[in-house]
Image (cartoon, rainbow, N blue to C red):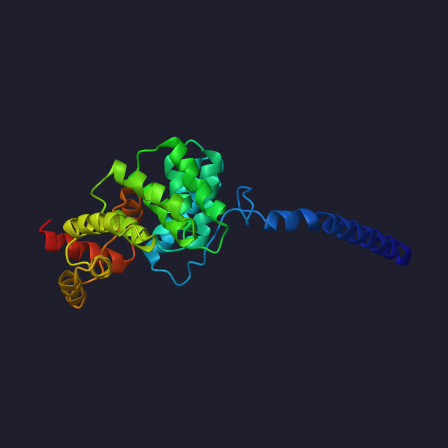
Length: 278
């Protein structure tokens, strides 16, 4: 009897040792699985933002968009749609990751290249890194004026006035009604001492967007430089009652903004529609 029990005990010990070896062998595979999403998407490639403090409808929409990527990893549309929702809710870093992946999967899409560029503006990056997606977008479709305005802004702030000027001028060749571009080009020309041409663009901006503070301030500076003191004083006085409200009309970024479904943004849109009588 004792020998039988010892035999059973030895067999049990052998089984436990075998199980231990098996488990140890599977740990690396388990760790590899832990570092990936439930359908094999690398966790560091697919942003999964913290949704615990988000409004429920926002959290649900983001999770649905994320799962769409999990279920179709090779779809530029899925990655791009997730990026748009992240972008709309001001989650710029994960949005950039997803826009970049969408652009990589579909380099012929103007939308993903352009929107990737918009998330890089203002970041502490080399100018070529910021401009690259915009340049890719321009090769796909050269007829979108806001693209060239944005390129002009990047070039202007990074100290390349000649290239900035060319970009602004291209934007205005496509759409001469962009008040913000006339203003930016006018200010650039003013800094280059091309005062008369600067005034032409600033006055065009003023005609398109009256009572805008920076346009009036820039015109005051230009008129004073030209010896037109009474006009300079008038423009200076106007700046005291003006609001700085000029913006770039951008259909693609407007579409992104509409995807923000937070209660606050929904209320804003509803109030704006009510005031328009819609």
